Image (cartoon, rainbow, N blue to C red; front, top):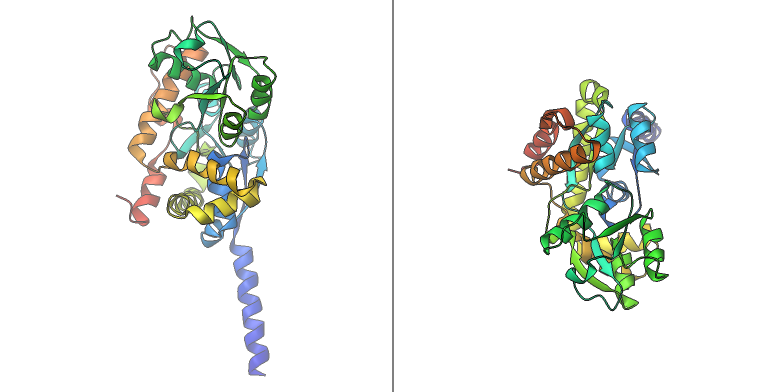
Length: 317
């Protein structure tokens, strides 16, 4: 009888725990090394530890912004021009955390092009005009003494695989690529001219949610952020485990998974100061693209108070 009661008690506890978990939807614009915070947090149980049961879906940045503002998803992970531009144009969303505060992108060129300066007058493939890849290309060009508006031509090709194909087929002279495609391009004889994280801070991934969610469920947001921080800690501290995760998640062989890890691990950072600096830069660049001339306070675009609380609870100063 006692055994039966104990079994019954365990079943009840498990059922209550399952009921108590918050079911959420997180949208991502792509499955790549710089987007692994929450997939890894799901796989390694960090979200479950925080009472979160996630569904992670892949949709475009524009569709993700619409789904977020319409309540069809709870969170998105892309911070670039699409999210910031939406907030600037009145969409009720805000950035609540940064997890990758610099673009994990490289400027990759044809084999005969040996330097950024040699790209003068050439065409560079980017995702969209005004997006992170476009800004990264312009920032790299400026850093190496070129006029990013006059000396380079930009072609909006689309996602990374399309940019890689355009470069491989000789349709462009260079492309902005992230791991593992930068590694694949180098193996094919293309040259990596520069890496974006060496020249700028510009948040690429983090957490964006609706203003309504911030008002109604700040505790849930904090728990999601805590899971993200735990995942980032794991990524930085556990190379072998993260490589294994990348092999499974992205269906990569060990060589490519290792190259992907080595290409992204440096930019996984939860520093609020770096996040703020980067967000202000994104705001300024997005204002230029949207031809917005008014002053835009950080609080209109982001609410970083919750991540500060989460970090304090996790012992991060």
